[in-house]
Length: 423
Image (cartoon, rainbow, N blue to C red; front, top):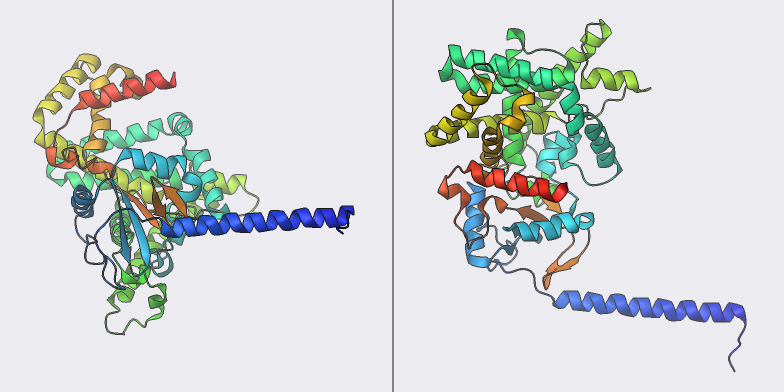
């Protein structure tokens, strides 16, 4: 006879619920274990697809793999999983709609632990520390803040760039890098890059070059086997450790030089408004860990965009002539201002088109999944690196990069459609 006491009834219900939950989880585990990974090249024992992972011109190499295996495919290296997405549909589904599971970052021992880039919230693991950095960044650099606080600074830097290009056009790359670095340091640290700071421009460029190399998935074996970071620098095959030491010096110099100058200016009462000064004034504590997080996306991406624009205008003089005609018609001999943007639709679209035509970051930064997921009948395992190679579009369409076609009309039409949807 079963005792119908409330305590026993509650316990019986909990037992049944627990067994049902266990059975459901076991069923899901078995189901998932039977699911295939997305298609991809056959892996070697233990080494996986280490031979198929492109080391140079990665976006192009991954595009060729997409032509063979489809818009979503799977690679593995020493037990680690890499999922490559080559269409905006898959990116939207996995990185946008399922962002709660795909917003994490890989550990990246070479970059974060050996080179000292763990201060950068762009490569931080998803969590409270990342959220705090993101909140701080958004408060200062959302579009409305940039528009109201930094348009004059941007205009001043643009005018200086034009003067330098007029006097020595052959040095355009130097002028571009100096202008962008000046803009970032004025906003972040409140000082202008003068001749006495010229070494800082060089340090920044070298440090960011190291970042680009080390953030490439599969570039260094230590990212796949983290215990290798303990190998002595003198050990045969440990050249990555010696390289990391040099890059770490550049990374810390890039962080500390402008930051210390900003602190000196604040202490002397000479600091103009900037990120560092405002943060110190608004904070009860002077804990500025990660204060220069904007150095990474600011300098390198802007320089790359400028260089792509120069290349596009060289290859497509017809687009340059059309832009010049619009500029002459609207500005009538004066320099354009931000208020003229609405009257310059072709130039506005041209700037957007340059970003599409020569993406500065074909993969952005790799994402990492937090839990197992099922997508389109495939298993996306926990801890998998997800890379989006949408620069080249779907394999069924011509490569955007190979066409080398500048079409501002396409970007202008796209912008009109976006506005119509958001209004």
